[in-house]
Image (cartoon, rainbow, N blue to C red; front, side, top):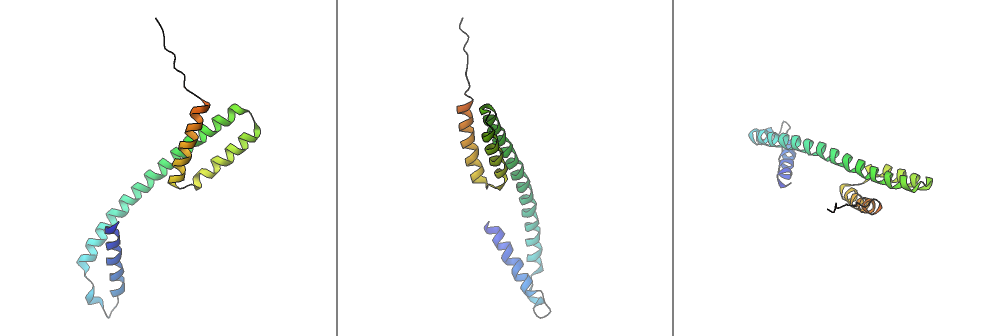
Length: 122
C-alpha cells in the first residue's frame, strides 16, 4: 500500500508540473517507471477483484442453498419468504459480514442436517 501511495504522490506532482511554466521540473524517467509499476499493480488488482467476485458469488450460492434447504423442511410459507428475503440481502454484505453469515448458517445447517455415520459390525 505504501508503494501505491508513493506512485500517487509521484503522479500528483507530475500533474502539478505539466504546464508550460514548470515543464522543466518534470522527471519523465521517474514518471515512466511509476507508470509501469502502477500498470502492473492495476493488472494485479483487476485479477484480485475478479477472484473476489467469484469467491463472493460462491459463498452467496452456498449460503442460499443451505438457507433454502432448511426452509424447505419446515414446509412453512413464512419461512420460505424469510429465507428468500435473506438470500436477496447477501450481495449487499461486505466480506466480513458474508463470512460471518456463512459460519452462522453453516452451523444451523449442520444442526438441522446432522451427519450420521454407521459403523458396520462384524
